[in-house]
Image (cartoon, rainbow, N blue to C red; front, side, top):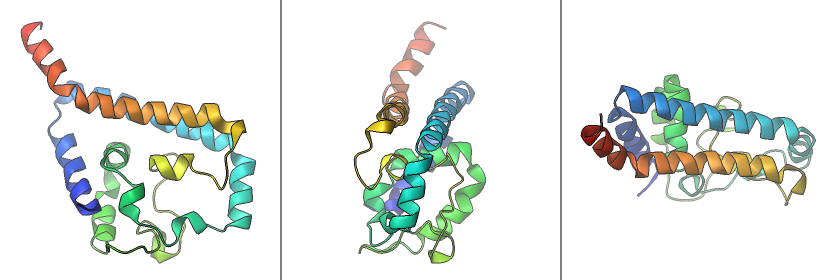
Length: 165
């Protein structure tokens, strides 16, 4: 369907939340942000090696819709709502063919997402398997899994709150 559709869906999902649900979503997203910070800290030498050897190759000639999901957009829009107009402008240039990442500033980089508020795959993917950061990668993945479960079971929680205030 494309990333523009996912962007609209992410905005709809967030807009439908009540105050209590927004607070819970913010807590989940802040936990993911902390996990990303821990991963970045632990992976500092790995990332330095990636930047010197590959020079951002992972952001080149890709299908952004295969990397960035609706859940990534929910996460980013929750923690950085001020990015919404910038994301919308970037998505206006979305193409169906592989190209450089839409979210590179001026088309070349660096990434326009703030540090520790990045899509899951962008954060957990390295040039090769890195056993030294498996625990931190797992934490980030668990955080995104928790985000997905939050939305999957939202209607049940609302129903329970209705019957058991």
